[in-house]
Length: 86
Image (tube, rainbow, N blue to C red; front, side):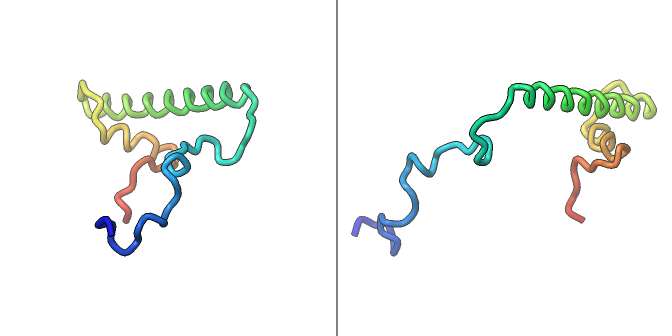
């Protein structure tokens, strides 16, 4: 025995198979238009979040956008970015 415990060396997958990165969840090819569309939607979403976060900051008469301003901004749109699990 080489000090590996009860499992020995026969359990699990090989190193190369285990560390292979899963990128697209079984999709072999995707159109380049998907990436452009995704980029556009993400840009609009982030613009809205930043705009609301800056509005919270200005309303509180602060000069720095805090993390809580960014957390509260999507909640105004009905999307919770962070939840404490309650």
